[in-house]
Image 1 (cartoon, rainbow, N blue to C red):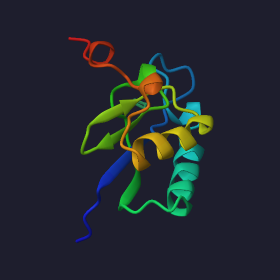
Image 2 (spheres, helix red, strand yellow):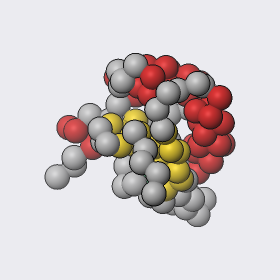
Image 3 (cartoon, rainbow, N blue to C red):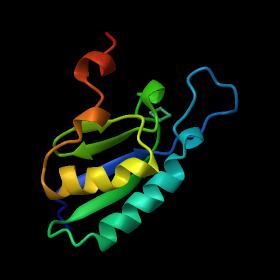
Image 4 (spheres, rainbow, N blue to C red):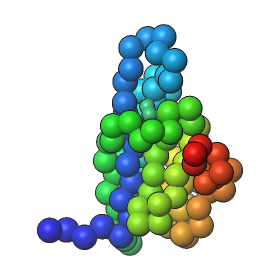
Length: 110
Ligand code: FES
């Protein structure tokens, strides 16, 4: 089994139109994951990075949502324009992109 240094999950959940919670698929997350995967592949990173699609991550109001493990860093409102920052800052230099992070306070609604 291959070990990944970083494992990214991008929510691609799709809900019916008009659903009150909305969904990441309606916020371009499918194309986002495809572009992220392609750019990771061609970025020359010297670590093993895996990009996977995910179902709902229960942070729908922050979509499009992705999470990076093992750090468990959650990003919200991610667009294709943010991909280069995520790759260079977080994946290459291990500095999370703070402007995109979903803080614990915002995420933990309980
Ligand atoms: S639909 Fe993406 S987190 Fe729920």
